Image (cartoon, rainbow, N blue to C red; front, top):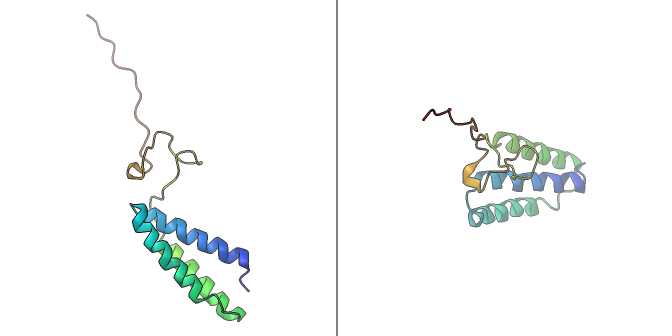
Length: 104
């Protein structure tokens, strides 16, 4: 049987995944409402087998729709502190070699 904690974790992962794909917050908000409606539609499922099937289907969808370059906040592990917006996803660090020596 899927526990309340497992369902909440699944819901949160769904929201985070949709945030990886959405460029603007107002687009993501519509997706978040749709995800919420899907979870609400299955709220009253009490049969453990059916809960398990729903949970496995949702896990499979999460795996299938995983973003190839997920967004990491700049302060999170794996995030870039120089990153200023979502448009600069995980850009490589700039090359900071010293300039060549000039003889005048």
